[in-house]
Length: 117
Image (cartoon, rainbow, N blue to C red; front, side):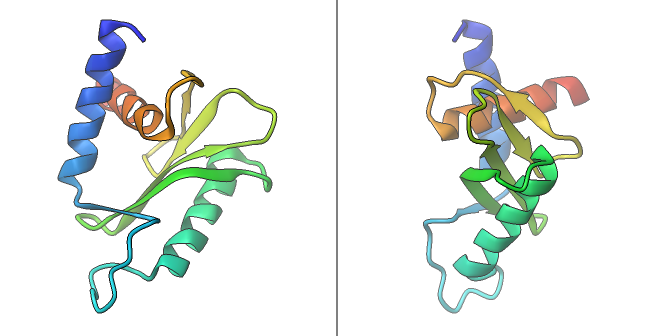
């Protein structure tokens, strides 16, 4: 990753953090502002199929954004190096396959911010 890539990752991470995210691994019993883990998993799997156009898409990293009650995820299709971010107004293709899923998601959101700005 270049310095510019790191700046994109940082901008994306800040934006995600501001959305009050809840990850798939988190449990929130009694919190009515957040769907159950099962509901979040199902919604993200559907989002992945839609974003990639492939029924075999897998969730690499998924979030429920409490601020706008939407989902954001990084998805991969088996045997493809690029991942796809779903949950923004347009799917974003993400390379950097050597980086972990969180960094790839944050970088892609940074790309989305840059294009929108």
